[in-house]
Structure formats: C-alpha cells, structure tokens
Length: 396
Image (cartoon, rainbow, N blue to C red; front, side, top):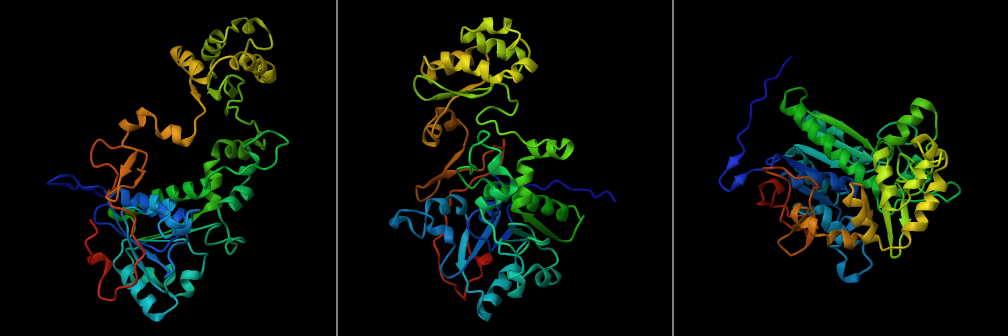
C-alpha cells in the first residue's frame, strides 16, 4: 500500500522549527550510548526527559576534579537541552511516576541489562501493549537475545571481544584500545538513526509503534565493516598496518618530521608521483620495486624508509603546505586542542555556546535550514516533584 506523506509546514515566527519538535523522549539510559542517542534527538528538537536514580547518572561524576562532580564536562556534553528528574524505580511511587512519563512519550530509550526494566514492570513487554504508539529503543552490550544477552559489557569489553583491539597497531604489538569510547559513541549514533527511522515508519502509517534492539557488539562490527565484510567474503583476516592507510600504500602513512609528524594520503598513481616529486624522489618510480601500485605494495617498507629519511628534514607544517600545493592529501598530526583552534571550524557551526557559557560540540552536520542545535545547558539533578508532569513543564 502506498501511503501519501503530506508535507508539514514547520514555519513559525522566528524561523524554522527543528524536525523533531513535538516528539517526547523518556530517557532511562545512563553513561554514554543511550544518553548520546537522546542527545542527537534533542539537538533536532525533541523534548527529552532524563529519568535518573536518586544518585544521578554515573557520568555526572566522570571527572578527576572535585569541583566538577555532579556536572562533569563529559555529562554536560551529551545531556544539554534535556530536562532531568530523579526517581527511585524500586518504590511503587517511583515506578508509577515513571509509567506516567512513559505514557506521555513517543520514544523510550533505556540501556539497562536485558530484563531489568521487565522486572520493574516497566519493560517493553508491559508498556508497549498499553501504549502501542511507543518507539522503544533498548541498548545493551550484546542485545536482548542470544547466549551473551545477560553478560555485562562496556566500551573496552566490546572493543576487546569484537576484534577491534587487534586491528590497530602493527603485527606483534599488544592489543590496542582506541583512546576514547568509540563503541559507545557509534552505538549511540546508530540508536538515534534507528529511532528516527522508526518515527518515520510510524508517521507513514507503516507501523503503529516499534521495538528496537541495539547491541554494542553488533554496532562495533558494523563500524568495522571495511575489514569485516572482506573477512566474511574471503576469509582473509584484517591485517594490522599501524598508521598506514586502508589501501596499505606506503605513500599513505604517518611519518616523523623535524618537529611532530605528518600523515599523507597518496594512493592513486598520479598522487604517488606528486608525493615523490615533492620529496625529490621521482627517480624511485624508475625502480621496478616502486614502479607500479602492486610492486609498491610488495616493497612498501623499502619505499617508506626512503620517504622517512627526507620527511624528517623539515617541519610538518612546511611539508603540509608543499603537499597540499600539488593536491596531495596531507595533514600535520595535531592534538584535539589544536584541532579545535583551527580557524576553519569557526565557519562550521560545530561548537555550541550554551546559556551558562559552556561550549559543547554540535551534531557534526549542517542543514541549510532548521539544523541541529541547542542553547540550553545540561540539567542539574533534581528530586521528584509529585505536582509537576515533565511534559507540562516549559523546557524550550
């Protein structure tokens, strides 16, 4: 059946309303993956109520600085624009209040271990029949079914189990964890995508409601699809190539310079020739070992060694300018602080300044109209107020 979707007029005085304006999200999740999913919904206009235990989301205290406890920067960065209420779900009063919030929601996000919400009487099995239009998103380490469903997980556990720790580094290196919660982050993004897809299904009349099962292990393997798909199709295990690019070309690698380091991205023959010309190594292409892409792959270390000898004679910034001048992808290795200080980012609407002066990252993409953003700070933890309903509070 073809369902006609009528355009919705989102124009109001003062500009275009964000796409999820009017969508209500009851967020029972904590730490990173779940809150990040609802954060992206909030950036796109959804009204998110964060339901926390009386002690608060543990992420509130993820800081080494005592004065930041309760509002750690990591917490603020993915909870801006939300409302918070603390409920003790172990009490009948707390559970009743939680159900009242669920009843008024379009979306529920939770990342308890499978079965926890059911034992509280607040799981999808109990709530969705009563409120069939709900989009229910459960995030967990290994999913709601399968032999590992009840096993506890966190980011580095899934990095370990998924094979991710044996993709980075060089052969013989110890397992290497990616230096930030990459799996949590991608899982949250995947969950936000799934929720918005389900909302579109509901809007088009394809489903009444939806139940979404997002697993960190599944997400990690999908994130590694560039190496996992070849493994599925050929049985060839991913190679550990260090900082060398996915192409394994020796001209697509990271090299030490007189100060710092530079990463090059020359893969195609024309870019390789331009790279070697900048380095004064054009004669290398006359060497049968380096004359073709296939030959360079076999003798990659030998060519990389010749390049390294030249690259260490000048500063990374000098080389960066020289390579970019001839169209070769090149970048100095920078710290995150140096990256944020780049004048380019000032043109990208990437950093939001909130009402309390805090600065956080935006969604990472731009719309010509009605794009993502918020100026509301992350909420302080507050006790349950039996006289207020979150959906009736002014949160915009």
